[in-house]
Image 1: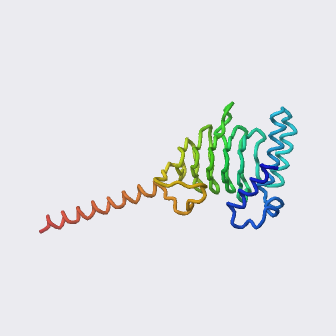
Image 2: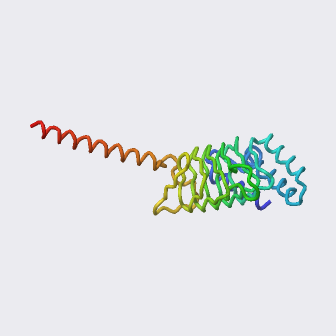
Image 3: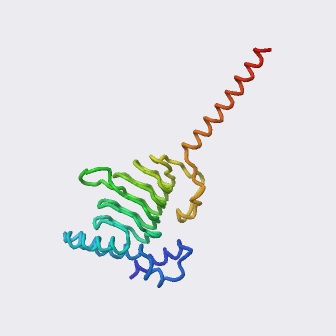
Length: 216
């Protein structure tokens, strides 16, 4: 009950639409998926894998969220909306994480052993992001919407784009990763293209000036 209570408080803190803990408990699919996963993981750890998969598949049918019974989920996980989330067997998710709908914590093939990502504490994974492979996403990191992350993300960094590139958050410290404005993340690729475009314009001006001088 302690874990359920702290989970409901985490939803209240992070979802401005949440009006009461009773509403969250009864109507939020992320809470239901987490509760079902605890049951499935309990069975999985006792080698009752068929029963564990039965529970997880029922949860998938009921909530639209697929969490493999073998995945390890930390405390106070908040799943916002949740539809289309997939979390693989060897994935590990730390405490105080926030995951939006359409996220995949998956593998990259049919490798054996550890093949899914390890997500640190207080990590935000935005809508539609795909984190694929057996690497670590550091504490307080952010994954931008629709990013495809194929390699390690350092702590306190943001991954943006396809494939994702790392953008450091310099000089900022937040209690919750989601307190940083998600709409102001800039792609380093776009910034580089803008810099190249600016340089090209400058070169064109120099050529025009040289041509004018030569004509005179």
